[in-house]
Image (cartoon, rainbow, N blue to C red; front, side, top):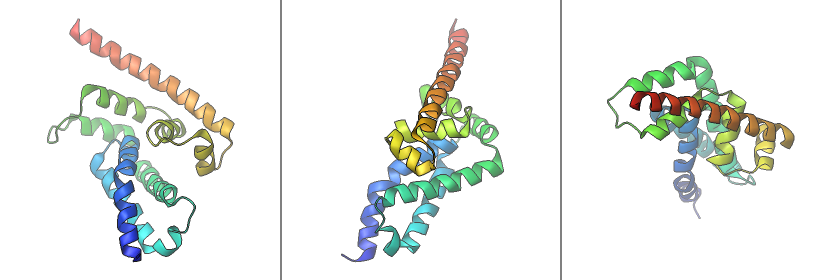
Length: 166
C-alpha cells in the first residue's frame, strides 16, 4: 500500500475522535480542529516512522494534547471559554454540553485531562499512566478528584439553572 493512502485511512479513522477530545479540553471547536490538523501534519511528515509505532493514534493524540496545552497556557482557557459561550454566531450547543464544557474548563489541568482521556477517549488507567509518565495510582487520584470537582461544578450549574426557573 502507498504510504499516502495508508495515512489517509489512518487520518479518516482518527481525526474526528481526537478532535472531539481536544475540543473538550480547549472548549473551542475551531481551535481544536486547527490543533489536531497540526498534529496530523506532523505525523504525515514523519509517517514512515510514526506508522511503525505500537500505537500511532496515541502519538498523534499526545502531539495534539501538547499543542493544546501550549495554546491554553498562552491564552488563559477559562476566560476564552466563557467569552466564546457568549458569542452567538455559531449554533449553540445544548445546555448540558455547555455546562459540562464550563465545568471541565474550571477543574485542574491534570484532572481535566485524565477525565477526558478516560471517559471520552476510552483509555484505561494504565494507558493514561503510560502516556503521562506517571503511576497508575496518580491517574486514579486525578480521576477521583476530577470527577468530584466536576460533580461539584455541575451541581452549582444545576442549582443556578433551578433558581432561574423557580
